[in-house]
Structures are given as structure tokens and as C-alpha cells.
Length: 227
Image 1 (cartoon, rainbow, N blue to C red):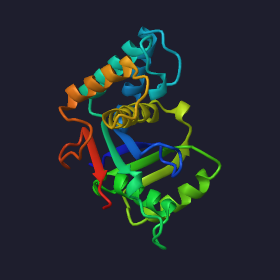
Image 2 (image 1 turned 90 degrees about the horizontal axis):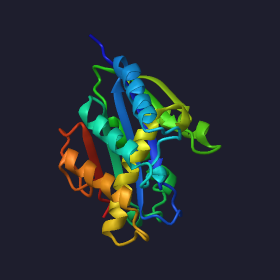
Image 3 (image 1 turned 90 degrees about the vertical axis):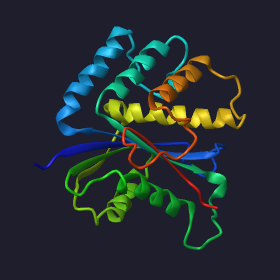
Image 4 (image 1 turned 180 degrees about the horizontal axis):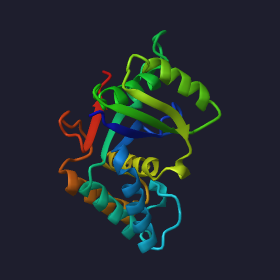
């Protein structure tokens, strides 16, 4: 029986000169048959805590901690999966003629998606709209992934339309914040964010700063070494 999965992609501090040391591309994936149940569960969590805003890492603070803590607990109790590719941007060498930052960005998307797919299944890929160049990005990503016959739908959506993109934002935000904290680059540490990071670490039993084995499907990290 052919199974269908939806993959929801997001990006964090991925611009070349945004002042942040790491580029993160991440995605959540879920079986198509479980989408409605998962949406209802997240809706109930938000309603329970009186939270009506979009779920995102920048909204994590003491007043909202409980809703995000329950969201993380829920994620680790169900079949959804998360994968992220992490790059230290200082290692990217733009002097190479065939290796511009833009080229590198798309190669990392290939790394994110290619290793997430099983050719026996079908995948619908949804990406967060970031800017006016989204249609060009989509076309280039289609060409990069056109070898993969398991891809069904490939389109952009807005983050406020998808709690699964929002969940990817929260998880990537935690990874990014933790990396910056460990390098001493976090000013005015937010206690609620540190508590949420510790909760994630406890659930997946990893440090959030290193590559996980490929067989770790639930929460998979790939730190790419370029030098």
C-alpha cells in the first residue's frame, strides 16, 4: 500500500549577511491520514492555554511557556518527525565560481529533503513563503528534485496557514538559540526559552549541537562540515 506524507519546510537565519552565525533549514513530516487529528490536537492545546497567536520561537516567553511546553510534549508523543540541516555560515566559501551562497542554499535543501524520502511512498512538500522571489525558488527546487518520482505536490504556503510549519519554526528556533547560547552570543537570556530547550533535550536525549545517526528519524539533525 502506497503511503502519502506531507513535509512542511521552514528556514531560520538563512540569509548570507543577516548577522547570525548559522543557517538552518528544517522540516516536519506527517502521514497524510494523521493530519486532521494532529491539527485538532494542536488547536486544543492552544485553546486550553488561551493562546491565539501564531506558534513561533520569537513568541516563547514566561507568559506563553506552558502552551509551548505542552506542544513539545505532544510532538514527542506522536508519529510526527522533524529534520534539520545546520550550517556554520563562516565556512561557506563564496570565492568559488560555481559555489555562490544562493547555490549553496539550494544544495542544502536537497540535503534536507533527499534523505527524508523513501521512494516507495508519496510526498507532498510545502514551503513557507519568505519573500517576492518565492516563485523562482520553487521552480529551482522543483528542478533540483525532479529526479524524485515520489514527490507529488510541491508548493508554497504562508506560515500562518500551517501549524506544522510553525512547529518547525519553534524547533529550529530552539536549536539555533542553543547553539548561539553555547557560543556566548545570546544576550539577555530568556528563561522560558532555556527551559523549552532543556525539555527538548530531555525528550530526544541529545545535546542539539551535533549530527544524529540516520536511524534517528523522530528528531534528526545534520550538521554539515564544509572545512
